[in-house]
Length: 268
Ligand SMILES: Cc1cc2nc3c(=O)[nH]c(=O)nc-3n(C[C@H](O)[C@H](O)[C@H](O)COP(=O)(O)OP(=O)(O)OC[C@H]3O[C@@H](n4cnc5c(N)ncnc54)[C@H](O)[C@@H]3O)c2cc1C
Image 1 (cartoon, helix red, strand yellow):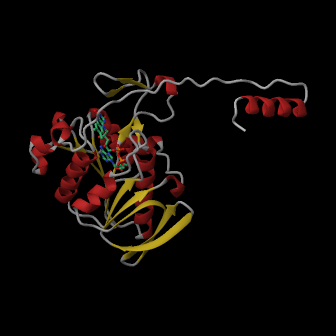
Image 2 (cartoon, protein in one colour):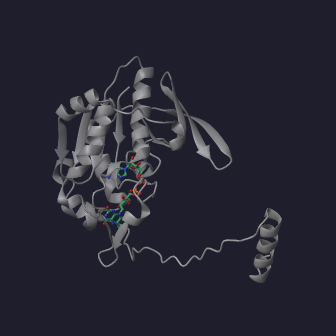
Image 3 (cartoon, helix red, strand yellow):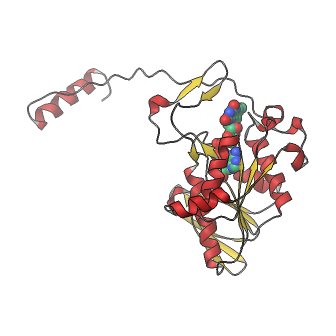
């Protein structure tokens, strides 16, 4: 069972909201000082899914972790290696900067072809910063592979992968042939946490670094030059919410005051 897991490094979603700032003029998210970026949590779950699939194949197969991003994205790759993946690949070049989902998926798909198509390609259901949830599906389309998104479970049955998708009113079970693209949701469960020994071992593993020319792409196809979506504005909305505490000696009195206030405001 060979797998490639695409992982993205993102600003820490646990950081306080006040640390999140954008430069509206440059339309860029600013790095939060003192807060280290992390592997996208859904992508750590995708690595976990790959490890479980390999366990179900008697431990046979190679798991590769692939990321597009700046120098710091190496840490997201190392996290996957520390969890138990075997090899890391880093698409790192200034020309990749400021791309959109299309340019990212195009570069990832070229890297996947260069590595060699595995049995399974795994992604997070979405990156928890921009939340577009599109990169996995675009890669599936570019590579002409079957895909299933937002998965809570995966089971190997011979040459088939049985999956359970999270849908609005329950779950949907489908079976896919391999190779295929799968995107993993938070319902999959907690990923394993790398131990110190594994982190030290991962630090010694080589990570292959590729730029656009290694992938057969020219500078006009990647990053800002190749993007198909243009951003018009990026801003933090003003919050003008006011909070009113309903006072009263008893619950009945508070309830009566609440009803009166809601009537005054014509809410009921
Ligand atoms: C017009 C526009 C301008 C933008 N400008 C900027 C900008 O200046 N700076 C900036 O940082 N972002 C920018 N973005 C956001 C950036 O392009 C998004 O990261 C991209 O559109 C993909 O969306 P997403 O990150 O929500 O990924 P999703 O589609 O939500 O990701 C799904 C999954 O795909 C995989 N994946 C996604 N990205 C990567 C990656 N880089 N490497 C490996 N795997 C990956 C992961 O498995 C992830 O869980 C811009 C977006 C748009 C539309």
